[in-house]
Structures are given as C-alpha cells and as structure tokens.
Image 1 (cartoon, rainbow, N blue to C red):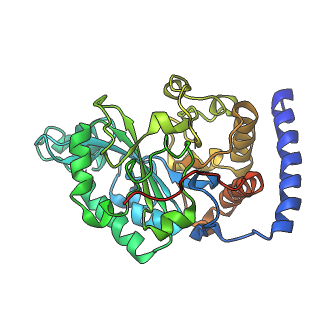
Image 2 (image 1 turned 90 degrees about the vertical axis):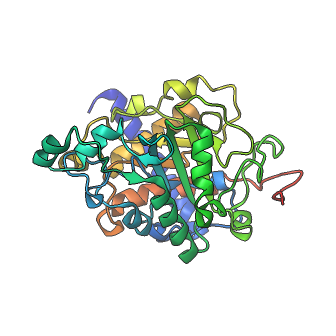
Length: 342
C-alpha cells in the first residue's frame, strides 16, 4: 500500500472507531433502506443515496449500455432518494425526454445491436417522456407520505419548457419545494427541517444544472444546482480526484452552498466491473478524503449500478456512517422566520 493511501486508511479507521462508539450512545442504528427521517434535522443535515443517470437502467430496457440495474420504481423501493436525470427536447420542440448525450444515441442504446443498426436512422424516438416519471414519483410519494426525494436535472431544455412540464403533472408539482416556498437568501441559506417539509407536504426538492444557459427565474419550481450544491469531480475512481470540486463547482464558490454532492462513478463502467469500485472501504475513504479537503459532510453520494439493500449491505453501512456524522455535528437550526410562504 502506498504511503498516501495508508495514511488515508489509518485516518478513516480511526474516525470509524470514534463514530461507532459515539453512535452506540445515540442508539441510531437503523435500516436506512427505508430512510427513517429525523424531523428535527434540517434537509441538509442528512445523507441520501443517489442514482447517477437513474433512468439508464437495464430493467428499463437499456440493452447495449446502462448505468443502473434497477428501474426508478425499484430504486425507490431500494432506498434511493436522489435521482440524477438528463433531460432533452424532443423533435417536436415541446416534449421533454430522458436521454443521455443525445436522444438519437439513446434510442440506439435501448435496443439490441441488430435493432440499433436497423433503426439508427428511424424518425421514431424510442425514449421516455419525463412526465411519465414525474407521475411515478408523485404516486410513490403519495403511498409513502413521510419520504423526501431530490432530483438533479442535467438540463438541456429551455427552463420555461421544463417548468411547464413539471406543472403539467399536478400530483408531482404540488409536492415540490420551490424557491418561492423557501427563499434561501431570506432564510440565511438554512434549509427547512425534515419535519417542516413533511408537515407542509413539500417533499420534493429539484436542482437544475442549467446546461441550456437560459435564465432561472424566481417563479420556477427548481433551485440552481451550481448556486446551492458543492459538488465533487465525476468520471473517476481516484480517491484524490473525487475529493476535489468539479470545475463548475469551483466557478461558483462565491455562493453560499450548504449542500454537498459526492459523485462516486466512472465515465464508462460496466456492471460486470462495478463491484471492483463499489466497495464500502473505497467509498468510505472517498468520503473521508473529501471531508479533509473540503470541510463538508456529503448530503448525497451518487453511484452507478445500485443494488437491492440485501445485496448492498456494506454500502448502506457507509451511508449510515455519514448520517451519524451529520447527527453528531448538527446544531439546532436558528432562523428569524422558519415558516413556509402561503
């Protein structure tokens, strides 16, 4: 083992032992596959399992290349609470689709090789409408009335169109915590308590990584990801690289960001090799190194190839450790006004 890796390992081992001893005193060992939420903690005082390109799923029909095994419904049942979704505009100029890189490429990746070659130049786009998944989220949250989810849009769509698409699904839109509901600047950049979000039934938070570069207006139902979330590098499994901020995050350091997204996924990785990287000890080292370099505790850890809880016990233990860190470091949230706007 190299000296640097050994030092990181020793620091992590020491931190783990301290956290475990303290956690026993707090009696907070729990089954996080169901995400028991502490109503007295703020939204940014918890860590949520997050699916990178959550829609690109083997069980959803992505055949040649996929980045998840479980479909979004199965991910919800498995305990995923953060969803990274790439959205593009269909050829009709009005419909928002879930695609990756480009919808034409997505169509090919969803088929077998023979079908892809046969249909590569077809005008029919075999992709998924965003509205279908917004309805799925709304239905699931109705059945699970205390749960909270977060959506990260990598958005290549005009923000007006994305906003209208969200509004077109009332069962989803009514649950969204909007900047008008919760003006971060007025709240001194403090997020609401979990209990407040549950009581007001505002249990969806949306962040927009604005690739379309169209203005984000206050009336839109999403927050600016770059202005709210400190984010790690992606497309690498090198611990020292994961512990650095991605370029877009560095460019927005002037903003008060009280959320952290740790991206733990490579650029091109297949499921057959995912177990090599999705090992609990490596994930925990990445968390520790991020904390040492950046000084924040992750609120979201994003993975490819998330598995069912019974197959991913070790990774869930890491999520649990991070939540213990949040609990131990949390302070009562002080606000002049903690009420939601009517």
